Image 1 (cartoon, rainbow, N blue to C red):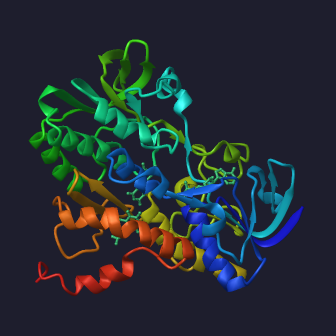
Image 2: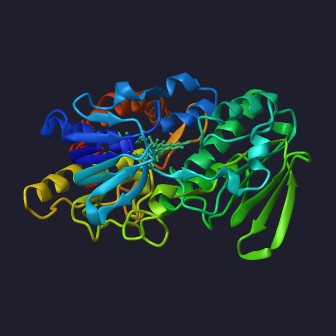
Image 3: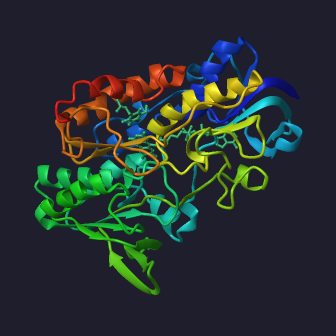
Length: 416
Ligand code: FAD
Ligand code: UQ1
């Protein structure tokens, strides 16, 4: 059994960033990180792996090397939270008592919720793929190379997702791949999304509708994947506005974004979560609404921002400063504006850099029109973001672009 000042559950983007800040401040041995995985994945790279622009082995590093050396890593997972007693029980049966708790367990992928999908994803060299899991991401580029003609279908599930732009980034990359390889004329490219919009922020949705029109991509809104029939190469969709209406489509390539939910370990502890299972924090301070020594960061939090690593960066400093305020007997004072960013890669050399806040209003860093497809933003996503993530964010040294935005706004000659 263990005792600590701060227990961080989950050593992903958010857990690692805040653990680095906190252990620098508190010193050796005061922070415990509970994390079961051997490797830490930079998930935003999965989009590039699916498009053949990066390799899977570039997307992960051993957990031991990314977690802060001053913190103690417990290689186990949280099985039960008891915030009333300031403790967490692990899967192996240990009890960890804490003074402060940061929950950073991310989001759970539920591939098995779609009948036939796991079977389809296990067929060697098959035409069904998914960028969302390291287990399946390498199938995407292989399936793209193997595609000859027919229907390419891309899906967006009827659930909360992380990086809501990612299901359509691979759509655009694949369409560009087909043009580059002379296969486009034989292909029917379809995006079936559960959402009622192409993207949640109108400013960028308007730009993306132009992209799909220009490139002859068919978009079906409110269309949700409910079954895959791997033997027949068919996918079944429901119309979410008329659930009795089902459509079966033949596929020659199917990219699935799986349904997602909050991790099971949270669902048991009703005092910790909202009715959708996410950690019930105040959207401004990221402090738990009932337990003042509990905070959450990232994809597992119920704060209503888009779930991205960019949000985690912005949240990391807010959580850290508010938690230390409470440690010092003060009230949380930093307020999170809901900042999220989604580099919407639209091909092998182009990207629309979406940045926005809780109100789904653009909150852009650069003094240029970011709704335009740009080469510069593509290389920022492909070559600048990975080192920024590994060297700065995970070491607690990147708090998002808010400061740069303020400085760069001085150069914005569009405002008079
Ligand atoms: P994660 O980084 O997922 O970490 C969660 C950690 O918790 C994991 O290490 C896991 O092992 C651990 N864990 C789970 N259960 C338990 C348990 N019971 N006990 C202990 N530990 C546990 N974001 C962007 O900003 N830009 C992008 O371009 C972008 N593209 C993306 C593309 C794809 C295909 C995907 C999948 C994601 C993308 N994201 C992007 C989103 C980004 O990766 C996530 O929002 C970010 O990783 C969230 O950080 P987190 O710390 O909340 O969760
Ligand atoms: C960001 O901060 C971040 O987290 C490290 C990402 O995830 C990889 C992003 O994709 C983006 C775009 C940002 C925001 C950074 C800038 C410079 C706009």
